[in-house]
Length: 472
Image (cartoon, rainbow, N blue to C red; front, side, top):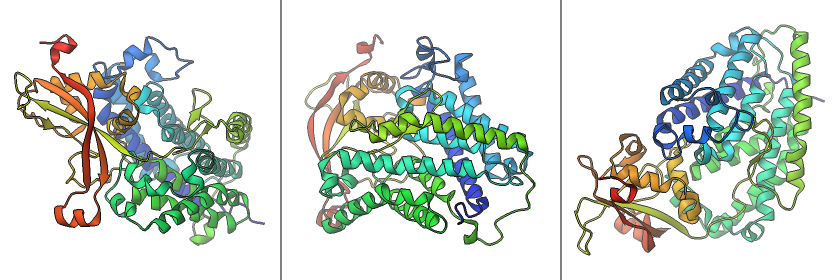
């Protein structure tokens, strides 16, 4: 029985796809960190480092931090990822190839472990876990290690099966197949096609939910069947993930799941995929065996979590993010709420004050603005704004700092936004209001061009000026 199907095509697709996602992740880190995590950021890394140790948060920044050094780390990671995308890394001698992948993993681990709330998403751990396994998949002239390819399947099974379990154990709407009545409208960051997905007939939404359960709770076990069954199981997952990519923005979660599934595709799909190879060095065999044993031991807690009725949705059980647990949307929000941030240059706030709205790049704002496609790029501020709208505690540590930076027209913060309504002078006051958003119906969409209807709910933050923060 052919359990692996060669592995050369799958390895190439996996490493190429992973390198692209590393490139996206490092570029996003370099472009966003100053306002979020920099020395003058909303959650400054130096302040975080003063309360932790290397062994609690392994990071190169525990030895030294400056904004310039962070930028150098991020752009170095991006450069190495670009070189890898170009195929240079795979053609290096085996030790050098492994070293490049190890540096990519170590640099991104360093960022994640000081990233605090901005890097608290499950796909950060997923990128790190997949990136660690990439160190041991070998170069282009080495036979793909069967044990490592099986570990990639084990990771993919935990991603899909964990997500399926968290749903079936969580919100009752997953069990009665009605969650998709709401999800496309209330997901963190809708995409350009989300309005159309939301307007699908309800019977199709039930088919979506049932298909999700099948793909996440049954199909993953086919990954460990002989080929071509394993490849068919992976193809089903890829199709499902493409559907999710089309219906919303989930950073690189769906793309990385696709990349993992591509590692299962057999060489028979593309005759001639196997290059000229050399024998496997004994030391490499020993290393991959040791890594496999280590991953098996570290899998105990994730497996125990999967079997628990108190399953954690996304969690790392050690600071190196080597073996993690995954899951998403155990609870579905039925009503979409959004925080709308506004400013005014009036000297006094009166009932006649004219407020101007800040526009974010990804999260819904102006009703007539169509949602954009950003994934796999990750807009961290936009995502945390969604969490703050449904649970104000998510904004306790950073939202005040965000408002202060708007009152200062801080250039680094404004670069995270789509539009600054005060391009010349900063506003005198900023406020935040909570709105309920709903996708328009077809008739309204045709008549007005609006994608959203919205109604005010409450005031999140009354008008504040810099005096509130000790300025002016």
